[in-house]
Amino acid sequence: MTVAITTPTGNVGRHVLRLAVQAGIRPRVLLRHPSALPSEVRDRVDAVRVDQLDVDSVVAATTGVDALYWVDPPTSVPDPLDGYRKATESLAAAVRANGIRRVVFQSSQGAECRQGMGDIDGLAVTETALDELGIDVVHLRCGYFFTNLLFDLDSILEGTITTAMDPDRKLPWVAPEDIAAVAAARLLSSDWHGRHVQAVHGPEDLSFREVAALVGEVLDRSVTIRQVSDDDVREELAGFGMSPEQIVSIVDMTAGIRDGFVPENPRDFTTTTPTALAGWVRTRLKAVCEA
Image 1 (cartoon, rainbow, N blue to C red):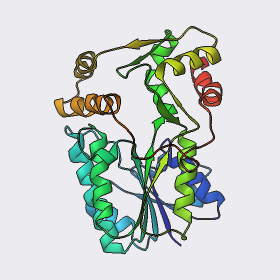
Image 2: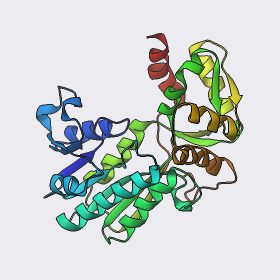
Image 3: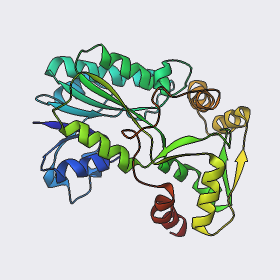
Image 4: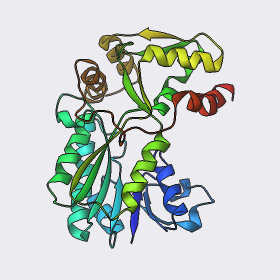
């Protein structure tokens, strides 16, 4: 079985890579810069330089692949949805050209809405295209990544977590390594067929207010919530030089989850993963804060 892994240095992909190697697989890894791979894994994988937005590049890189772990890559194009569409075109072309029979797609909660969820609408585009190919596919509808807290590191060090989300709305928070465990299990198994949706919710639903209290307790400092408006976010992102389309994709994503969204996939045994946020904060966030 030939297994291919995209974004093998990403928050989730690097753990998928490790699990595949530990399972005795020599995976083919697709990435822009093979030199970014850790030195200890370079002789255990077949690395291929790939631009996921380039159809020919992806088709050539996936020749002979049986199972593919696919993540739509982050792009700097002015319209994020255009980037998602280009990545999806590459993926669909590769599946058709190379007869890839199984794809594990890293999606997100909210993709089931198909429209009105900002950046997540791009993941819905990929889900829909994969469904039309008639292959074995699983969409991993992931919760809110623990690692998103690292984007707010400066604010946390000053004693606040900033969000445009309702601070008391509970969300599923999940560790990237737990997503990887589910992804690797699906990727390496040949016992499932057809279209599946697998939510990955982490161990518990938490509000931002609860997260702030937990982070403050572990870091032994006062951490409070600073709630900002959508207009505040728009102004800040415009100050970073983002395009109007990029700003809309971020603001609408938060608003879509915040304003009445009900997940298609309820929490159950299959969606609940073990890594608690407190442990992650203690081992990862605290180390970064103290560095």
